[in-house]
Every structure is written in structure tokens, then in C-alpha cells.
Length: 205
Image (tube, rainbow, N blue to C red; front, side, top):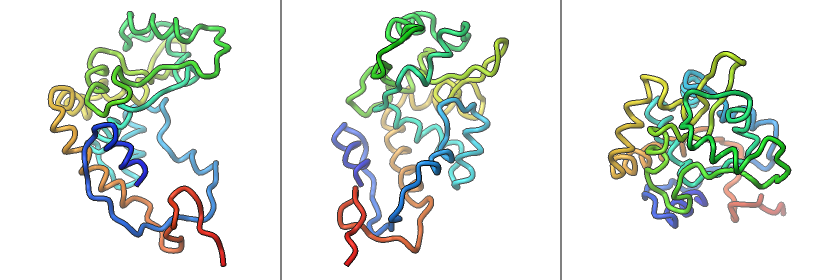
């Protein structure tokens, strides 16, 4: 619900949010290893989403949530300093190097994942088509694997969807709403609790 309200406040799309979903009473940090990594290539991302009942279009569509995202330097510094990533726009890479120098000591330094960081729009996809996806990953000193942002434009399964969203914001909004409804039904549990306040567990009697 919080995410839904955040997207609406940022001029994003509307979608029906089902109420009554149960939450667990314990959160485990190690369970986050199951989340898609910003260093994943397209094949890993497709497989990760498929395990959750989400298809390729859902992958590209939900990645559009990065329109409001921010990344610290540590998630992409290897891409801009270790060697030259052929998938990245050279001017964009230079700007990233200025924000994230090799001996960076600012733990808060980083880059927004699109140029309109406070507005929900399709600018994220436009940047990817220009080689300005922030996330990318190096496999070794000789070859690269596009990271989770730029990966979407380096694979035939996803590139056309990126292009369509970059050209048509209304289409992106429509499909994003549909994919969020699907995402809301992933991992539903039966033995949890319906929280009185979304951000805290219920008080035991």
C-alpha cells in the first residue's frame, strides 16, 4: 500500500490494491538474497522472475519502477573504473566518474536511475535506449554482461518492450498497473497477520 501511494504521489499510474494480505511477524535479512541483483544479466533476470510466476514483459515493466530509484556508487563503480564498458554512453560514463571517483570517500554519493527522479514517467526507458542505464556488470577483464538496467536493451526478448515504453508513456503506465497487480499476488502466505499499521507487527495480547 505504501508503494502504491508513493507512486501516485509521484504522478504514477493507479491500480486496484487487494486488501487483507497477511504479513509475517519476523523479517530475515538473508532472505533478500532471493531478490534480483543489479549485476544480473537478462537471462538471470528472466529466470528469477519466472520463479515468481512473472513473465518477460513483467520483468521489463516492473523495472520501470527504477524511474524513482537511486544507486550508490558501489553498485556500478566497477563498470566505469575497471575498464571501458562498451554498452555505456561515454559522456554518461564520464559524468558518473565525476560523481563516483575511484577513491570515493562519500558513502552517500551515487546516481539517480533516471533524470526526472521525483516523477514517475518513462524517462528510465529513454535513458536505456541511449546507453544510460546505471546498472551494468563485468564478468571478467575481457567480457561484459549487461547489468539489470542496460541488460534490458541487450537482449532480443526485452529490447522491443523497452523501445515501446520509451515511445509510449501511456502504454507503460497501463502495463505497469497490470504487472503490479500480478506482483501483489506473489508470495501470499496463510499463517501471517493482517497488520493494523503496515510498517510494524501487531502487538500481542
